[in-house]
Image 1 (spheres, rainbow, N blue to C red):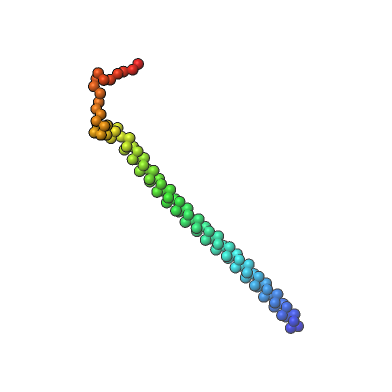
Image 2: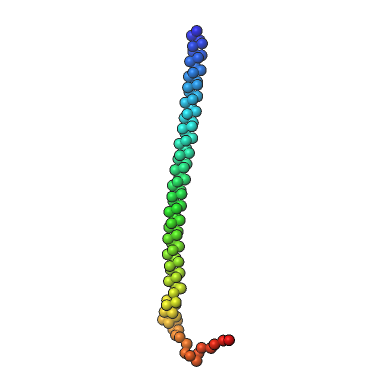
Amino acid sequence: MLASGRKKGGVELFRLILIALIFMAVALVYVWFRISITKIDYRIAEEMHRGDTLMEENRKLKIEVATLKSPHRIESIARTKLGMCYPERDQVIFLK
């Protein structure tokens, strides 16, 4: 009777250990997935911030292009740096 009791207790202990190992494996997989999701969330946040920064830089560059294309600025540079002036009436030639 003592031998069969050990056998029965050993089988129950084995089942208990097996269930505990399965539970731990599931818990580890769950934790690994949560860590992966958290890393992905951080990456998404970084990329969104980078996108916002690039959008702001794009807006500033568009403003700079508009400023550089300004007719008043171009006229000022033509007059001061290049010594240009408006043509006289007799210097203008009209083409048909």
